[in-house]
Every structure is written in structure tokens, then in C-alpha cells.
Image 1: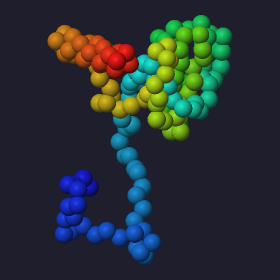
Image 2: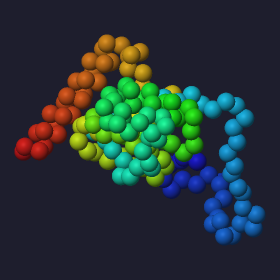
Image 3: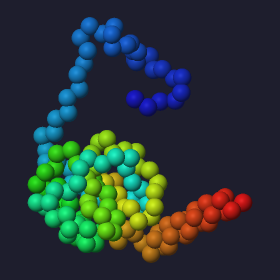
Image 4: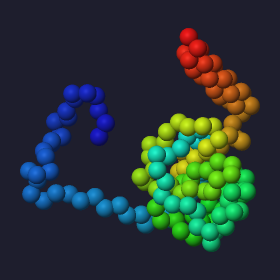
Length: 157
């Protein structure tokens, strides 16, 4: 429940779990098909730890080192379709392999702009830039530029 600070509705009961004799257990169950997902890109962000490397059965190590982002993305999507358990995304940069992420790989941290992290999220949480109007794209670009200028002025002041 979300409410105003220090507001307690009359119907709400607050007790510790120790005082409840028969605690309620929440069990997630989905009877429908899994939600559609997309990869959201985070440039200049990396996880504090990784899960493992993309298996060589999906893409050989040497090929990973030479592949561009689109090729690595295709390999990851292939891996995800075969082994969807627990993988929340991947991180990579030119010249390095694909490192897989899991639930322990968060929060993401700022790093060099070469690193790019891709997170698997529900489609509704991933902006489709192609569908944005040209005005919206221009506004976002201006905001990013001003943010960088602001950061630059704070650093140099």
C-alpha cells in the first residue's frame, strides 16, 4: 500500500510476523504466457559483478572478442531463448566477451563509455525511440547535452 507519511487507514493492521500464528505466504503463479521482453541499453554503466560468460556453444570466445554489438546481441538472444533461467541481461564492450548478469549484478554503476549493459525488461519499460516524434528526439538530445554541460561546469568550477 502506498499512502501519505504517518497516515494509517482504519482498516489497516500492523503486526510483526512473529505475532501472526498463521502467516500468509505469497506464491507467484502465472497462468498466461510470459510477458514479452526487450533489451534496454545502458551506455557507460556496468554491474558490480557478473554471473558468467556467454557459453562457447552459443558463440566461441574468439568470435565474441571480434564481434560488434549487434552480433553479440543476436548471440545473447539465442542464448536467452534456449536458457532463460535467471539471466537478467549482459554487459560487454569492443574487444571483450559477453558477460551474463543475474539478480546479484545490481545496482549498475557508472563506468567508461565503452561498456554497455543490456537489461532484459518487460516491453512496456523499454522506450522505442523509433516511434518517438522528431521533436521528442530533439528534446531528449538537448536535455542530454545540457546535462553534460552542467556536469562539465560543476567539474571545472
